Length: 275
Length: 315
Image (cartoon, chains in turn orange, yellow):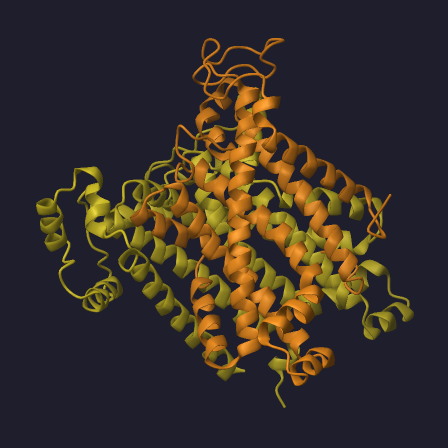
């Protein structure tokens, strides 16, 4: 199979299918889910039946429906975080590369500072003061994550800005915004799209880990991470319950990574290996 | 070379200082102030003012930072807001447990990853290599809790080989401790090994493209000998670097794994402290985690300098 003139390997195809299925589930949750996510339809931990394919959860709600609605929360949150961190990272990264001087120094030092300790630990410190409301979570992870986007877009823009056609545009008297939009952005697009996939899977795993630790999405809202937390005690009774949301997290991450791997290999044949 | 190492050590200290500023500032400059975070909903203007005074928040932040850092250097990390116990006393047993688990995992993961990665490089393109490539690509994206719960479900609940809870106490004997923490260790190893293996393989294969390797082949040496004796020593620097960075990742992985196996480590302590808004305890844990992270990063750089033959014999 070919897509945009590139051969699509099997792994990338699997990845694309996984992403598509997840997106459809997340967007169409109210129509796909057999029950409402908050509806109690039977006893706690009821066995799977033809109506409740995966059985019931800790409060007697349909597990499959909870999973489907959880896709909405997990994917939606990660998507919003990634978009924010991208907007922030690209603007600051390009600004640093084009303006140079003190702007570049200041921004780069701030980013160095933020990267001086593990993201999770820094997030803990912020959350210990601000609590775990959704806007706090979104902003914290987006800002921490934008440091990596900043580094990539700054490096990309630095390389591109040194090329002749960018210099020509500048000599021609084009404005800063025009140069970024017309000359730099189109040529930086391919690696940035791959980076978007990477950052998405990072934000997705990160928010899921926080929720699993009880510091992310709080009830009555639920994402896949908090579902693993709610169902975890059942593992000692040999139940599958916590493995469904955890598996869903893993499958989507693997799907995204397959696609990102393929995109990176398209744009860097020189590295070939992909490792 | 000594100057390079000294430079790197200095940079490490500077980073640690920066991290301490960040940890302190993170709980200070943010809009929600410490007193309202502690009191939460029960806050009245009077109780807030009193709490601010008790916590010393009425003095400038810079003064309190210098005080906090000074005390931290002397080994006094303050008192927990939730339990009112000394933070150092609270942390020490937990830190020992976390260190034990991390070292246990590293001791198993590093040799295993290097040997398996080398084997993949020797049989490059073969079935083993492709299988390793595929499996590591899968496990690299799997979250720790999925691995942990799968291991619990099958190795612990179904087969009953290992306990599912790692409930160690300070006087658990070493042998029992190794058994109790086997599953958490295995989870960490599985999660962290994939990346190490891939990087070992990639670094060796990159060296394999150089002319002196071709020379070794032309001398008629067998492939395993070329890989182990000629390519591997020269690929060591990037491999060591990756291992140290992966071990730094282990610090974060440990937090989640401790939660899965209800292991009384530093990560669990920090998570509890965060949900209770116990800021002094969070700061102390953060300082330790950041310190370990920075130390490993620094070790990676120093080892890279030491193992680089071009830097070892300066002209």
